[in-house]
Length: 68
Image (tube, rainbow, N blue to C red; front, side, top):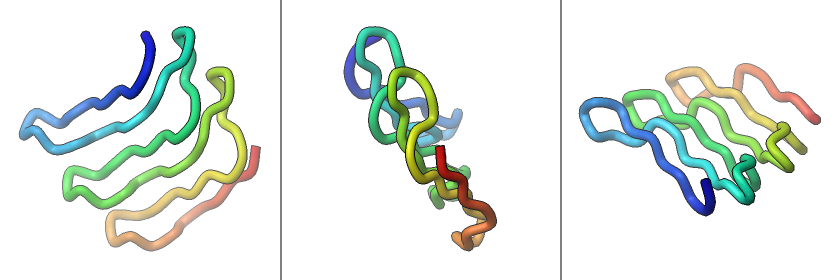
């Protein structure tokens, strides 16, 4: 797999946005609730979580952060 990747819910709304390089997750990774609100936002480096990750509830409030 190479380049940008998107997965969708059955109703066509975006579920996951990510990017691949040499078959590994790279760069920005975002998952979404069915409402379209961001669920998780972070970065990947060589298929591993990297940097600052933010987790949200379905109201858009930050519920957790992690640093890798």
